[in-house]
Length: 408
Image (cartoon, rainbow, N blue to C red):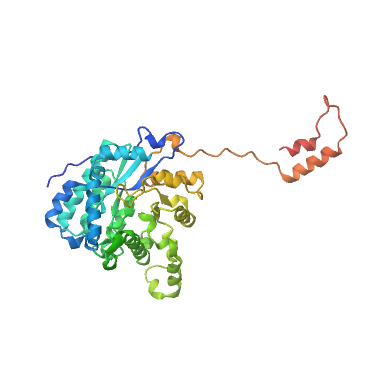
């Protein structure tokens, strides 16, 4: 199948021509790390091969959940496919730049390798075209056929070197195979070599027999899936072997942050938790980045306290119902965040990781240089000498030399 390729020169958003509405004076510069696009051409390509059991979100879903999902797919069709509609929603929400990634339903890891490669190329070309048309509003995160690691590495290089993408989005497992498996080491090595951001987003919980009711396959399944995936990356030695990897985990990183001390305890207590790593697991955990889709201020502030404001990135989950409609309001309303932390989380962190040029007005102002303080001993000596000095005429008296020295 022929593909329309977009040159890197056209698709690379190296500069922001003009600040978007969200970057106006008094507002935070905002980059959305977690937002999706659907490619109908890729959907049509794989449709003849689709089997319901290949999609956890469909397989482990009650009839009620399937109906809600069907209606949602209809209602968001325009927002997830139309670039023009997307821009209007971004402007309304104050989002300056989206890091666009595919809808998780389009990972297509279940397909044969050749179909997986063709669908990934269709999706990546679609994302690159949107970036090329609006380089001041979008950067691209590609998708890869990870069911065939060699093809995935080749597509990763094409995404970065030809299409100018700043990273990739991957699932938390590949058809039940964890990302710490040896077959994926070549992907991790290339991702580290290229210096790109890896955005890790679940495609549904892989073992969800007990999660079919109440949309639990997503509500608790997605964060749980991320928790398991990150744990495998840590204990499996991936983060130790590739220390310069830049990975952002969706949905606030799942549940791991709330109970990470248990990993350190296990590492110290059990030899089977030290097979591939020597340092405590939380040392690796603190290298990761996390989006802000946690819904409560106390959870957001907890992530900040644990990992630092410089490791949090604004996310919306556009355009799905489990997302955040007012992401900037959520960040700005957090009482435990300082103004510079809010600016970093809203967009400056993502801009640094994705090499997005920040408008001058949105850059934090440098604090004014402090004047050197007089030495304490000199000040005391000056005051003592001044008290002993004889009264002088106001017009002609000279100040004691010791007082002059005290002001140095």
